[in-house]
Image (cartoon, rainbow, N blue to C red; front, side, top):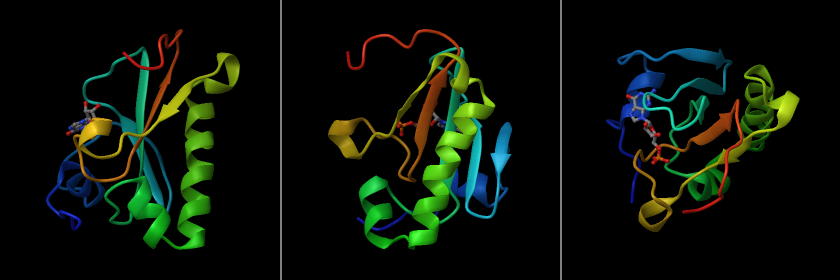
Length: 118
Ligand code: 5GP
């Protein structure tokens, strides 16, 4: 499967679709999920074109990987995760329940997140 440049997060990175931005640097963008599942629900995405975590780990530069991982922690702290914790997760592929084929970590915070899987 090759990267689809028309996916919704690619359009957000290119500024073609708006988002409620939480954080941005040269490597990553973080914004509120349009359909929040918890009090705080943020998406952290790399600006580079990667389908999922496996694709990212295979093709991204070491710098991109370091910056992305640091950004997950940074954004989690920005939205209050340092206080009582948070959950970070990424879905991969069909069985993983991934809907948007551009790597993203969900950050859930602001309340007890509950069961890990349903
Ligand atoms: P996935 O199921 O791929 O792990 O998660 C995709 C997430 O993207 C979902 O939580 C969904 O609500 C969110 N989403 C889909 N389209 C948009 C959009 O246009 N803007 C924002 N901010 N979030 C979106």
